[in-house]
Picture 1 (cartoon, rainbow, N blue to C red):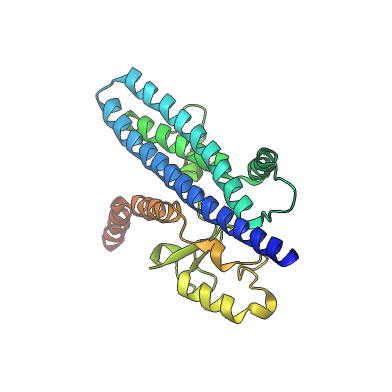
Picture 2 (cartoon, one colour):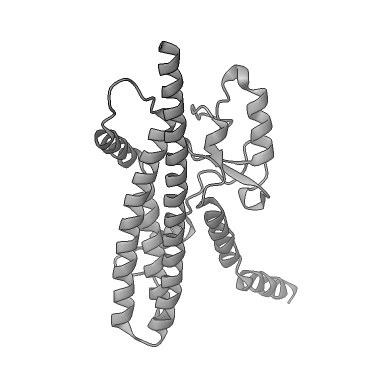
Length: 255
């Protein structure tokens, strides 16, 4: 009987993992679509601001705020779903799923960085609109150095792979740990984890105590978008007028 009961529990656990994995994938896809929508709304708002259609721009900003709040809730729910799928082991007593979800959602909110990321997205929306008529000027209430920091910050925790040394924006197959959020070259980190079984595959970033699990090191829906955003920022910061200024200085020295 014990063997049959154990087999039944194993089947139930497998089904739970399968269903939670599907739900997690669906929720991550939804979050990705929300982020794409926010980017599209920012571009539309810039065009409307050029036409001085102020009220429509304000309505779009309100919509962005609501979408980002929905994204927050969806993120917490998806992390709770994933955690339950990874850790839940059915026992002889019925599982109180509502209590379990509430506990996991509370944990997700406690460790979440999504609020900071969403504030950054909202700030980028407002900056894009402001710069239509105020290029190079700080937004009201801000110092210039604050503008520079906000414009250049990104959500990538590390800018180079700790194993290959390659810049993250140049990786062909970037992956990210869902536990510590560090980013690696996929081939390099997989080889590292195979060789590091004796040390339990600790994250190779200096000072990071997290233990890596192969199933939780992946290319999540946000990673490629965030890398593209960094590439775009780098292109914007590499302004051709800086080269022209140096050329002008050289000509003055020759004279």
